[in-house]
Image 1 (tube, rainbow, N blue to C red):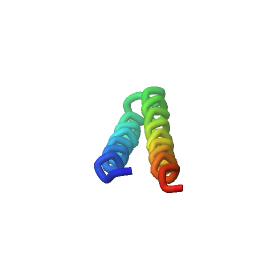
Image 2 (cartoon, rainbow, N blue to C red):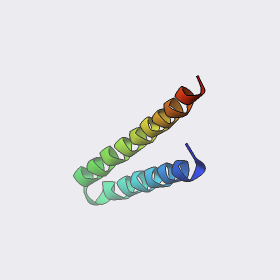
Image 3 (spheres, helix red, strand yellow):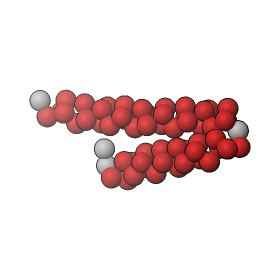
Image 4 (cartoon, rainbow, N blue to C red):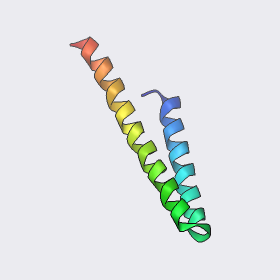
Length: 61
């Protein structure tokens, strides 16, 4: 994964987790929803990283 894409996943995940923490005081249900989106975003980052690694390693074999 290139640095720009890794930075995007890191910053967007931290923004979503921070938003979730702020929303706990305002609307706990909305905070849970935003946290679920943050978890999916983190998982999507891992999946993207694995796909890119698999794609680059398959050409080297």
